[in-house]
Image (cartoon, rainbow, N blue to C red; front, top):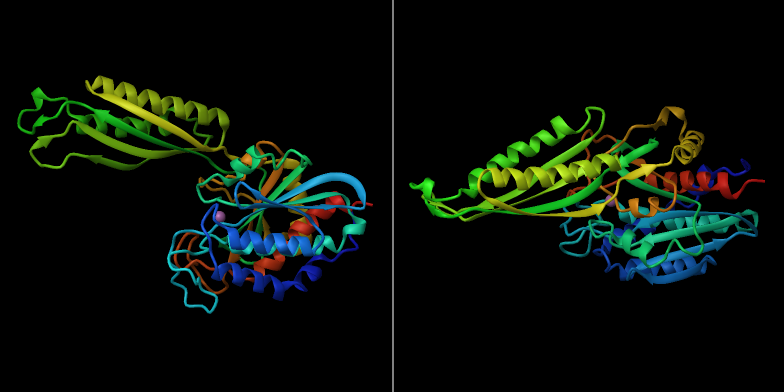
Length: 395
Ligand code: NI
């Protein structure tokens, strides 16, 4: 591995520019598939740096290609661009200028890190053996922009050999990096059902089929899927997030509607839990004399890191921030559509500690007071460059 580079110093030299980019994106947040301004800035910067640029993938997605002087592997790194429908409550000079919109997940930082990485790698072009693909993705927040980009062929030509993505993480202090092999983000489904019975007088239940009682049974039996069907060594969640039924104290309604989510890591467990949710909802309703109509929508697969690539990221992280600042085991049952890239290409998705110093409980992601310590920007650039160097700057 080429260790002539001191990526920490090289990335730190970009810090003022990284902060300027991040704050500009932060002030001008855009929702998924509407990132026209952000994508425009990204595409322009990549062109200036000499990247081959393709725009308009999945509406606002941007692909930047940097072909090295010699042949070699194709490395992809992904940066998401969308903001959230949240009104910012931070009183900072770089607060959102768009009422009702906010970069409350740190994707502004991701774009800045992506441009910083683009800058740093363009400087090494003559030494690069292989190709760097920078993917700026629209619509990560529940919109599956990654799936659309994959469908539109972003991974087709060239086909990446390795995929990398990092997320700033306000839960962990800045200067720490968390890299794990195996699952780090869950597969997610959205389910919704209507339980239909027969309405009637609240005092004459024998003349009705009570969908409220049926729904209550269903909710109870759903709890046994994780506790009785899933192995204690596996991980799963079945949540009922909404229930509606009835308007009056003395009326048994005809219908109850419910919806919720399923989260799993292991694809076999995923399949089993989906099957069991269907059985429980339909058969419990039937046992109550009611009828259930269930729809389960599969949203994203799990993000599962390749062990070997995770090891390479891990040692790159140790080089940069020291072994005592590198951790493993950060996993969430949240979902992330990078999974669509990682179904196709082995990769590693890892977390960059971004918690502002001195704050014991920083505002969580998707909170109106979410913010990051901007020191994470140059760390993000450096860790990605250090990892890419392992593959692209070998002598
Ligand atoms: Ni995010």
